[in-house]
Amino acid sequence: MHNLRSVAIALIGLALFAAAAVVTVSLTLLAGAVLTMALAARMLSLRAKPVPVRAKPQAQPMRVWNDGRGTIIDL
Image 1 (tube, rainbow, N blue to C red):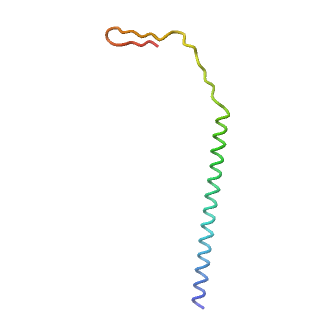
Image 2: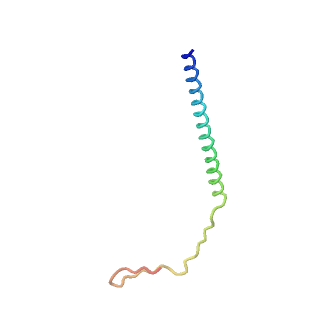
Image 3: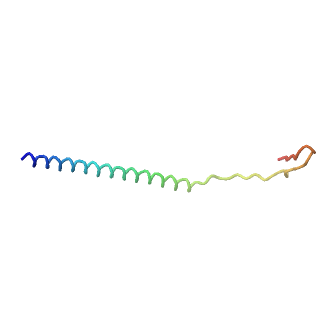
């Protein structure tokens, strides 16, 4: 009888360990899925709204000269 009780307790412990492992894996997969969806939504929302680029025409040409001590670049 004592041996049968030990086997039953061992099986119950093994079942609890397996249940905890299944819950841990399922919660990990759920968290990964939520984070993946959030990342995908963020990527898609950033592509939908591009930042406008404002280009200014260059009023003066760039001037480059050498004064004998070095090259001067006037922007």
